[in-house]
Amino acid sequence: MFDPFQYFSPIEFAFGAGRRSEIPGRLAARGVERVLVVTDAGIVNAGIAEQVERLLIEAGIGVERFTDVKSNPTVENVDAGAAMLTATRAQALVAIGGGSPIDAAKIIGAAAANGCSSHAFMTGERKIEIAGVPLVAVPTTAGSGAESAKVSVLVDHATGEKKGVFGPGTAPWLTVLDPELMVGLPPWLTAATGIDALSHALEAYLGRAASPISDALAEQSMRLVAGYVERAVENGRDLEARSAMTIASALGGLAKEQSGLGILHAVAMPVGYLYDLHHGYLCAALMPATLDCNRSAALAKTAWIGRAFGVSDGDDETAAAQAGSTIRALNERIGLGAGLRESGVRDEDHDRIVADAMTSYLLKNNPITGTPELCREVLVASL
Image 1 (cartoon, rainbow, N blue to C red):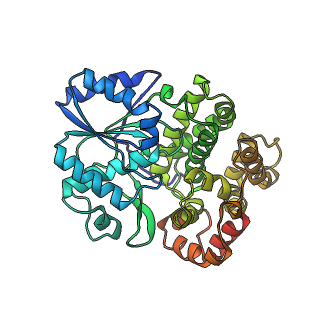
Image 2 (image 1 turned 135 degrees about the vertical axis):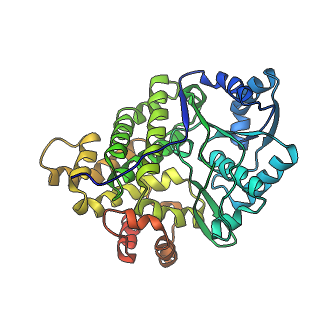
């Protein structure tokens, strides 16, 4: 028997090299005359933001730019962006970059529309009741899945938390998947974002809320990562590989929207908050242990993952037992082999990391219900 499920995505996707050229026309069709571009300094310095902004300006659309977005975006970033959105009276947001600008933009619109600090959304004091202005997401990395999701992950220094928030209108209206914008991405960042994409598909696939639709999305995402991530790392100008990873990221984001994540992300959140480490690197470090610790509860699916990444066919138990080591070997080949200890994770912080991980709703979706012992096992095995 199949369990009941539902699937809905309010996001329109436009994929293809050069599709960024369609953004001005789409905005003009909605009567938009001024936009706020949300990006970061790295995207500006690389000349990517200007590629999109020039198209908007040439079409007669006014452009304001907000760049105060950290790699782990904060409540302060969002509130400053919301103030600028209100002050400029922009009628739409265009987020250009990786998951950080896109996640920030989702809640910038919500904070401005609801007239409050995003801190209130993080604590639950306020709910997002009024949708913000339309958001166009233009990802420049293939990994975060933010372009496919309503959830925004933010850091709140006042509460000491990193977690997801969402509400009406936080999903992008339009996501433009243009692989040409990713051609200049450096090898390490290509690798880290690629494994981030894999982590979403993998945990959505293993999660208790998985459905036939989320499984289909997750499997295709993982096939594309398995077939193309090494090519994209080795040759950043390989447009076929860039295209495949762009699609893999979007599919992984859709899969996690449908069925959620698990213990990998529950543990990664507090580690990322404490040490300000790149989320994709954390996913790579925690993924082998996640597969090892969960395989008894998701044997057939763990075996499928192992085979997708090169485990020779055999019985499910054998293939599943090799899945973690196969991902560990992939990490090594693409430059993500460092354990958490090498990045500064201290033994004295383990108790706090485990305690913070235990507050995550994601643990309920893990194949094995998350406990302090299981969180510690994944953490320690990833050092």
